[in-house]
Structures are given as structure tokens and as C-alpha cells.
Length: 532
Image 1 (cartoon, rainbow, N blue to C red):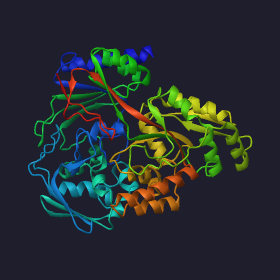
Image 2 (cartoon, one colour; image 1 turned 90 degrees about the vertical axis):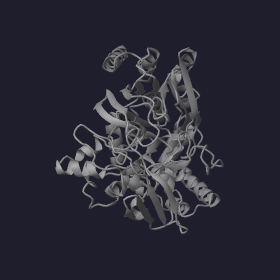
Image 3 (cartoon, one colour; image 1 turned 45 degrees about the vertical axis):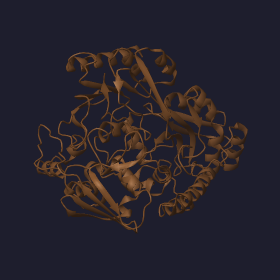
Image 4 (cartoon, helix red, strand yellow; image 1 turned 30 degrees about the vertical axis):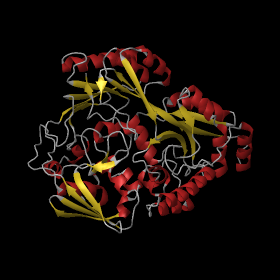
């Protein structure tokens, strides 16, 4: 711990020596929790990577209004939807500049070619960039966007039409998600000529409020203000991500004035933060769920009784008390209770060691079995301490005869192996991306998500799938809700997860910070922050 803190403070001092002085008003320092897996939101799903690219470098055709889930125009200045809800027409903004890099200077503004390039990279196998970086588009494929979108058409340089094969109720909200970010076709062509296609995912060029400058793995990410930004320009000249996995170290660096804002303070530090005169603490209801996913494609977890036994063996209330320190509520559904269509009639599995043993015996495992639990290597809003939770889960499972070995990896490796299905039991969670139930039920539990990698339970149930698919065909919220209520009942009975908790979201920062709002969709967005 001391060595970690000392190293963190040393690295932080190096940041400030580069920017001139501690608390330099021209540079905003954000103590983040982990390293991004890439700098292209098309190929990432984790919040760490979204913060580092989607909310800084890139933009979409439409976006969520800052601090809300209201959809507003972005790179498209306006849009219309046909009466049959199959055609979406977008009028694009003019004179929007892409970022410059030392080795690349754009010769034209954003236009329809960039929209087609970006969407078709994910959609078309023959696209020259489709297989770059492995060709894995977890969101796009998990949400079946390739089947939903029939065609993307360039009407002229500043008008694009997207035609669907069938109506899709959450389609516009899906377009506002990070994976629909718009990349530069001209930059892609430039990299192709140099035979450096992989750079498009690691050295990003977008239209957003910040320009990517430098990344040192597990240490620092540097951005500068985009002075050619088409909208309201950023308030700070520089943005620095100081990668600091340990939440206690983040708090110490905040107190020392070495960061202006920290993500996910430890629940144990919340009281101390509130007592610090120079600091302030923001909190909000998290649109999230933390869970233990059960790989249903591996024995003995293909047995429903085993999965139900695990649900009964784990003491969720103890985890909420010891790990979240009460700053969370017990989960029983894959949806958080703050989202419409939440099924409040579901009765959660009781914590009952003896009944869990009976179920294991009935399933053919009277002596239990051996397995692995993968524990989160980073703090997440839905799980502030994966290792400690893993130790408590390990002890609970041992009481019913299940001997669990704890495993973990660095964050990018953890996610990669999870997508591949290498795990047996794995801690994960989700913060909603668009405020629609489909973003939880379809992405995390739909059949397409198994191959795409977003469904880490690798669970595909035809009855659940039919309900979720039908719900997307209508915009009638009441009808959709009824279908989602039934889908949650199937989820509960077949138990592909152990839903653990829905947590509050906290951010701690210097009182000199203004303009920051907690994003209901879980991101950290700095385009309006300033230091006073």
C-alpha cells in the first residue's frame, strides 16, 4: 500500500511538473480508475474506455443532453423519422472540423462519407476496416444492429438516410450511444496508404471537444482543448487522466491537490471527504446493476438447480453492508428499479444455506464441486471492491460445499477473456447507456450477445428472447413494459446471474471545480468543467 501510494504521488508530481505547477488552472486532472482497452468506442464497452475516448474525442449524430437521457442533435443538426418508422433522415452540420495530429492534417470538414465509413465498418464484412482489431463489435452485434439496419445511404454531402428492416423502438437512443461515434474516413484512408490500419483504434481522430495527445499505459492520458470545435468550446486548455486504480490513493491525491476530481471514491472514505473543507462530494442514483454471471455453457452451471443454489448461497445483504457500506440496494432483477418496466413483483431468492445444499443434492452434487470466481480488478460504480466481495463469496460458497478459487487479471485482459467465455463465475456489472430496458435485457442477456461477448452468462433462452425481441417492435411503453415484466420472471426462474446490488454513484472533487454534473448513464464528461 505505501509503495503504491508513493508511486502514485511520484507519477502525479511528474504530471504537474510538465504542466507548470500544481493546480494549474489551464489543466484539469482527473484521477481515473483504470487503463482503457482501446481509444475507439466501436470496439469497447467499458466505462473506463468510454471516458477516455467517447466523451472526449468523438461525437455521434445525436447525443444525450448533458446530465440527462434526453436525445438532442449533435453532428446531425436535425433529423426526421418516417411514418412507418423505417427511415431516419439526418441533416448533417456543416463546417465541423476533424482533429489534427502531428502526422495527419484533414483537408475537408465532416460529411456524409464519414457517417457511412463509421457505420459500415461495423456492419459490412467487406469493409476494409471491419476485421481490424479482431473485428469484434460487441455493442453493434449484441444489439443486432447489423440485422436491424438495411442500408445507410449518402443523399448528398450533408444528408444521410438510414433505412431499417423492421421498426426498432430504441433505435434513436441506440444512435446516441458511444459505439455509434463518427470516425474520419479521410484519416482511415491515410492510414490505409501507410499500411497502419491498427492506429485508427489507438490514435483517435474525432470532432469532439478534446484532442487526444498522448497515452502512457497504466499511467497517463493527455488531451488538449479543441480550439476548432464547432460547438461551445471546453473551459480548460488541457485534460489529464491520471490512472490510479486504488481508490484510497485517489483520495490522497485529491486531498494533496494532485487531482481535481476522482472517480468512485471508496465507501469507507465518503465521511472523510465530506469533512474536508476544500472538497465536495456529489452523489446520484446509479442506473446500474452489479452481478455474478454464471457461465451456463459450462458444467455444472448448465444445470438450473445449481444456478438457483448459488443464488441462495450468497449473502447479498452482508456484501452491501461490508462493501458498499449501505450505499446500495439489494438487486433481484437485471434492471435497476429506477428504470421503467422494473418488475417489483419478483421475490428474490432467500439467503438459505440449507436450501442451497438441498438443491445441489437434487442436481447431483451432494458434496459440492470446485470452481473459480473471477474478481473485478478495478473499482466500478456497481462494485467498489471486487476482491473483498470475492473473498466473501468464496466463504459463502464453501458453506454449501462449493470450493471456489479466486482469479483476476488486469482490466483489458479481464474483459477480453470474459467476452471469449473463459470464465466459470465472474463479477461484472452494467451502467445503462441509453435509459431503455433493452440496453440491459437485450445487450446483457440476449442470444446475439453470446457471440458478441456482451452476454457473459452465455445464456440463450428462446422464450426470453421472443419477449425482448417483440418489445422492440412497438413504441407503446405500456405494451413494452408488459413484455419486459414477463422476461424478468423468466430470468429469475432460470437464474443465469446472481444480481447483487444497485449502487449510488459518487464523485469527489475540489471545491474549485464547477460545471461538472453526474451523468445518469455513468460517464465522466468534462466539456463544461472549469476551475475557479
